[in-house]
Image (cartoon, rainbow, N blue to C red; front, side, top):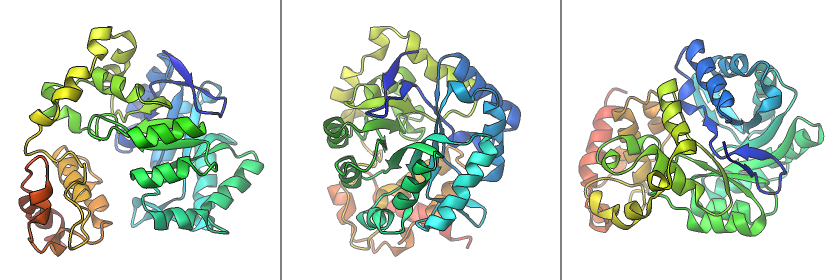
Length: 351
């Protein structure tokens, strides 16, 4: 397994990491088999992102005896609301969950403390405020409970702001054929920030039609790893079969890794498919259209948390005025109004 330096941290990380987003639901035996097989195959980077006690206990059990072989990225600024994963900007709540993370993982520190899901300027300002989560993270670092400070975002302007601030060692950001992250990668490269690529398969979208006709796990990973400053890509894998699909990257031929034809022809293959590009915005009702679309697609492929993620969106699809301006701007001719109605029927009608 190839390794790279994670920015200026000095950490050497495997180019393929272990995202554990889809290991919340599987039983202990599956979680253990995926994590241990990954480590045996040279994967040394593991991303631990949720606050659920059961999830953390399963990860802790799986990594027992492996701590000196892995780089742990533990998320901070997280919470549990009504039994579901959430974020918090309360430093006290964040620290409580962070110490719980250390206890359940059976370790006295994480290598990277990742401030989770900072997706707006307002959220960034709250993180940076006196007494906020960034100040808490610095305090935890002084105590030796985390080694390096990171931040994750899904919004380019916020990610660039973070990378340019000189306050973070690591940035986690979605990188895939639909979200090419040129500006974010350039900012990380310029400022020596280690870049972790999340969602290289666009949250599982690339395994669905029409993507799977022309995208493979190997060429998707190859693309993400080609971006400047990217040290590691952390796809989510829920079983050994998916792990081996990802590990195939290491033994793939140059031809299998090549993605140039995909870049040149992808738009022609995506008519009617939302790529979450946000060209439909601004919405006159303030709806984050791409996030609504993502929840619908995630629900279609059986992602159990999709309704809860949708529930956190404000405003929701029911606020749609059917003005049609979004559809007129969509470069892929998506019937957005029909999808908004579908979201209301699926996620809101039962409340």
